[in-house]
Image 1 (tube, rainbow, N blue to C red):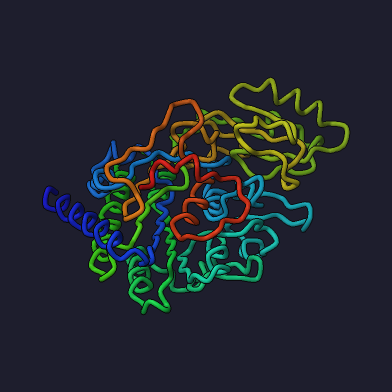
Image 2: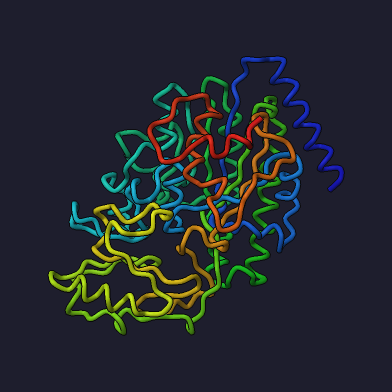
Length: 406
């Protein structure tokens, strides 16, 4: 490990020297998402690469957006818009405009561009003359605003790429001739989320997968550092949400607290959106307000800190369970899940960043229970800064995380 640290420091030092000497050389940015990468996994598990990146780059704890689920947050990271504004208000929801539900496992709705609002970062970059490469990121294989990334792959195309093949594609894209090479590459990896769901965040299986992903990222980074312009690469690894333990004992059944005759439709869980029949909104609100371990809000009255609850894709009432509780038609057979209040510590995610534009051995400040110094809506303006392009109007603010840059 000491030899590896020396290697990383040497690469970083060489990069700073070369960039300062060459002046006009373009910088490349690679953003990797490890789904369900809880912020404290590197503290619990053996993840030497994550540890080394904290030594030679930036270490941060990032706050997801609400709901802290995969599709809403990946699209937030791409657009800089909270889910309430980017269209993906949950992994599953009803859209009154299309009179059709959206679900991540339903190809018809998932590939319908009408569900996706805002301007993803790959479009912002391409509008300003840059090429982009995106691997399996939410929205990248959909004809949003009539545009795809320069290089991309459909999630439904077979055979599905393994993690190793995704790394191969990242290296291939970064090895293209300069005129064809993308300035921004984004790659999605759907672990350790799956193991965290099935076994829980602190199970041996989740530990093994988190450590495997650390090793995979290490191998990818070493391959990138062998490229002739390695000193021009900014490398960022982040998660979309955390993970917490659940059990059947902490479960509230829909049918026990919601009279069927009062409701037109219920969609999603953590949170659940309820369309209520005329004349029953107040009655159902009052009933749910008295249920322990549940929060219920009227449309437009969700706490400001959640930046949620105004989209027309949400019903008159929004119900969210306490951390670790379930509100559904049946308890999950899994041992872990997410989606909860975005300021819950268990929902926070780990971020590591290294490269010519980032500080060295810098830990971004974070105050428990207060406004995070790093929110995932800030990734979009950060990427624009790294790429030297003008951002679209978004919810994120570069000023909030300016301190991580040189």
